[in-house]
Length: 469
Image 1 (cartoon, rainbow, N blue to C red):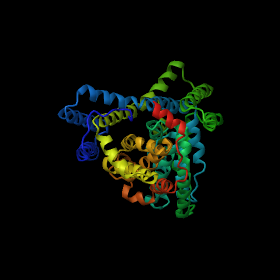
Image 2: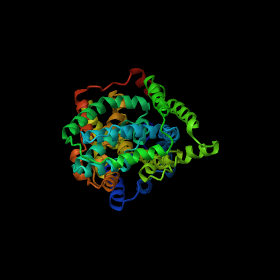
Image 3: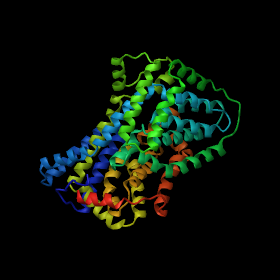
Image 4: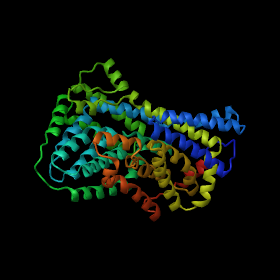
């Protein structure tokens, strides 16, 4: 959106009022009415169009701004299509079920909170969805914790921490793909860079839950046994099902481009599915588009494994298109440029820029309660400032995830906060003090910003290319 030329130049107070009105429309609709984000964004587009017409901006110019904004998300949209295919292919090849099955083997009553954190972390990375992890494996762990007489708040905190670690670091995650695409950073470059902040946060969280764990051994693991039995009933548990995961890791190590990596892994997974599958070619295509449907009869397993496919990404893709169209219109009407010009005069240093990015992502989560918008709006707003300071865009994408993705479950009225409270039976305010990973991730990224550690500059040739383009 940085190449979108503003057609109107509002004053800072006017731009602030318009942006607050847009955020008000979205926050009231999502938090107050419980609407999905799409409709509030469309209402905001209507509002901005009316504002533009009042300011004598031609509708054709506003339309160009919206189209230009949406075009900026084509890279993310392509990745989302491939992610939908990858999830389906990993299900029919048995990769995800096999990871889940062997992951359950590590669950013991000793150090239960730490084990819950580790298991949900593994599941989150394999599945790529924090909410699915919490609604399936998380619910089983809550039941075990309750049977042991342990703290539900700490158990829920461990589940939320692990689920969002997995979501944050998984190449299957929509937020991870969104954060990398919005600032035009290779997906696996983004994930490797996140490791600098995420690994320390993971280690600290694991130690905390290890200390908090009671070490008791009197517990019935029937729920996890039932999950393992259900996974066995799929007929998808095989050692060779882990080959696609190994292949993915190898391709990442060799820095293969994200789309090519995903394509190769999808092809390998589909090939493996014929070793144990009963799908015909026409059924295979249907699964790749519509997603895999598990029919074991074990509700928790079927809920866990019924997912994937191109069609499953349409909610996210449509939201990305609408959000970027909104951003394009805000740029075209000069709203964001006017505010950025004011902000850039204040935040001249790298420290203040990274701090402002983190606080903006957190603020949008609190005001709007939507993690996608916290990534999209903040990412678009701060790209020019990072370029101005010569900061590598992967620093921006990392900050968006550290302060955007993982903060959403800490907000009681957010999409994630409401969902987690419902499925885990523990209120957001109860588990919040124990969602250690989600609490310390923003702190670490801000700390790195102040110390300058792992904060890379963009290569001069890239800056020259940008200035010449």
